Length: 186
Image (cartoon, rainbow, N blue to C red):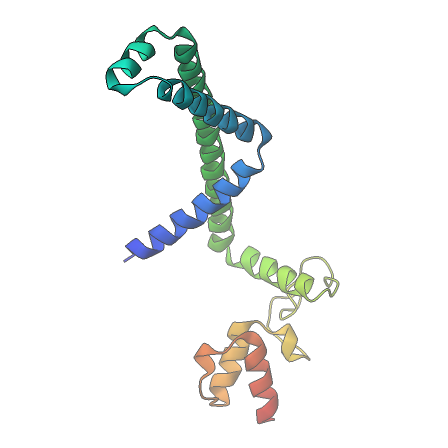
């Protein structure tokens, strides 16, 4: 019931991989290590192609100390780049866990959730917050009163009014569409 589908997991993994790739592309040390590993690999390829045949290549690989140093350098650079990648993944997972925990805490406290929702909706409209963190639909004594403007209502309250007015298609409407429909019914 709460499990995500395979395509949802794939989409999340692709989004996470994309964000991680962007973060790594902006990391100068990671780019430097990756370019160094590529350069080491190219040099190793050039050195192995100089000889003739497989036997010559194997003999040179075994005896060529410079090539062995290049290959060790490439391995070391790749290990360090992979270490940075793993560190970024761990910090990314920790951040997601913290955000999820904060959202769960807010969701578990209805009064806090209502106040946060009201503050966010007001901030998005660039209207200053009223009073101390009081919800615009409740008085200080806790009993409900009807706001003077439809914009001050939550989507759920607008939906309830749309139900009373028997507006068709209200379940798929956004808050703005519900406001328009209610105004058209007046």
